[in-house]
Amino acid sequence: MSNLNEGGAANGGRGKKYIIVLVFSAMLTALSIVLSRVCSIPIGNGYRIGFGKLPVVLAGCWMGALPGLAVGAVSDIIGAIMTTGWNPVLTIPAALTGMLPPVFLKFMAAKRGADGKTWRGFLKLLLAVLSTRVIVSGILMTFLLAYFYPTYQLKLVFFLWTRTGIAAIEAAIEAAVTYILYTNKSIDSMMKKHGI
Image (cartoon, rainbow, N blue to C red):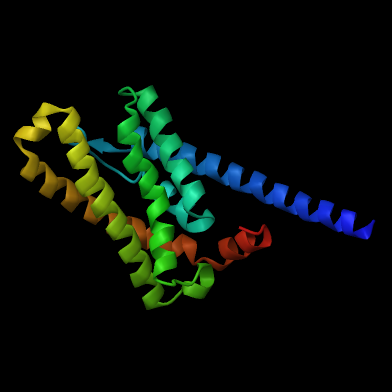
């Protein structure tokens, strides 16, 4: 009988963790939509300067690759439906933006949270975010836009360089903010308390 009770308690703890991950994911999704669609500066066709990817990166770093992927995808879908119209293929880069940083951090054996509050920890985080944003926003998204929109095909090299440069600058700022929040002792202890 005690085994059944212990199993029920374990399942209850796991269920509570999933609810907390869902709530955090919903908050970060909403924040991403606001930062991307409302608090960003459009420059030219198909690019905005802003920090809508920051909550997506945070979701991946704090909760893992799958919640990061979900936050990236859902925020892109809702934001696109609210503004320009949704293209499912263009959601792939948004999803990868949340999924890749934790994968890169795991590959580099980066320490999590307050344990990673070192200059090496910052460099690993910077490399993870920078690699993700250059690959996804700078290169992949530019080629996808060129496929769907002829104006990008005419000046592909120009858009490739400018989008990659802007993505790199945004990534450096996002990595710095992510590092401050990701290594914060209060946030880290709260995440660990809830098993995240």
